[in-house]
Image (cartoon, rainbow, N blue to C red; front, side):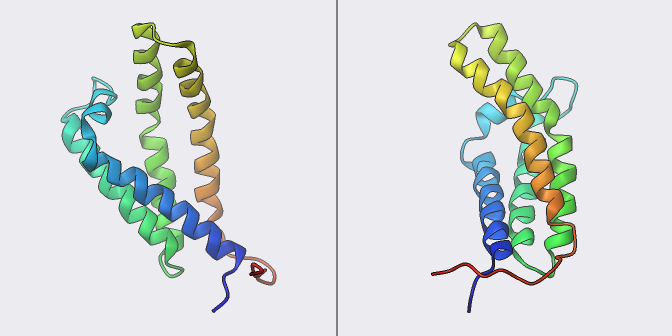
Length: 134
């Protein structure tokens, strides 16, 4: 069985979300602190978003569920964006190292890049499949 570039991209993208979703259960304490205060039940929201990330990651790896899973991940990435802003706000308030704040500023456009990447998996494939050499 040969692997196409699209297959490799789906596997990489799915693995990213499976790993980050798993962190919601392995180390939830920090994630709970970045849930904006206006949202209820931070622990439940962290667990639900972890389940959604894992399910989306698995789903995007399966060609039959790729499109629906990718749409779900786009919606999830938009929904959790306020937590990324909250993480930056908290870091700025602590007065920690400048590099931490710089990384958190970079994370904001990274979220847009992840949304774009997920969106690519909602589109029908075009043209011949290019196989990876190896």
